[in-house]
Image (cartoon, rainbow, N blue to C red; front, side, top):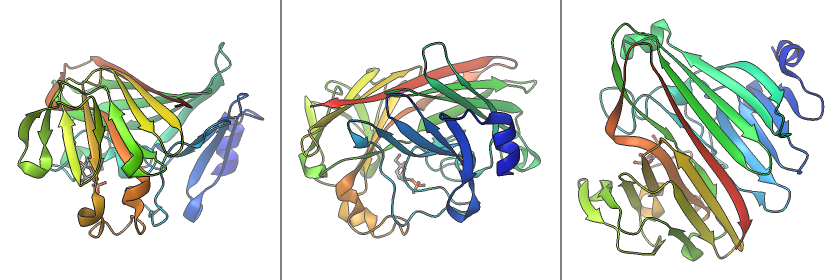
Length: 296
Ligand code: TA6
């Protein structure tokens, strides 16, 4: 499988496929700025992204499972067509399916692009009776941009939720702030989805939080005072933003989170949660997220 993938998609010095954990195929992608990332075909899952100057920007649990049917704990899980619990399995099926690579290329800008695709199958159709093609382009330069393209191949419209469930690495959660959400209404999932208006300029995390910020601004920043860096999230057509940290009380029940992982991780997720998005038959939904990291 690796040989076939490299025959089709190898770009020497920029893209190569190799066996990842448990033999799952992964693409190792490098950019001339010195940044690099690892992308598993399974779940189209970015498991690492590091920049020349700032090191690892994503969190990966040391207890993560890398096996079929299980979501990988960390990096950037792709959540589709359902966010959270509901009629489908939690967070949908895109994060525990095999995707296929459709292209790799160097863009005119010098950025490195790789596209992975997931389409409906008998399995997915059995739980979500619609035909679709979801193509995600990962563009690496000194930043990481993810471009989403979802085509409705059904004869009828469907509604969906989608999220880039990004686990960011932080030096110390107690010295980390989130800015850009002041004035936004959020659903507090730990308080029965109570609607609350965010009053803080800078949000500190000192307990379990699981908040869905509705119609959130397209620019959100994570200020990491411990690592003296700022992570900038710029999203488009992903209306909502989810902020999650399980803290002590909820970490114990998450078996694939290593001890005290809550202290070094923070999820800020660009998403469509509420209302769901509707997509007409034959139509294509496009969205994107760029993450960058600078000195604080
Ligand atoms: O995005 C936050 C959230 O929906 C939390 O409620 C928590 O369940 C988290 O996702 C992780 O979900 P998972 O199914 O990966 O354990």
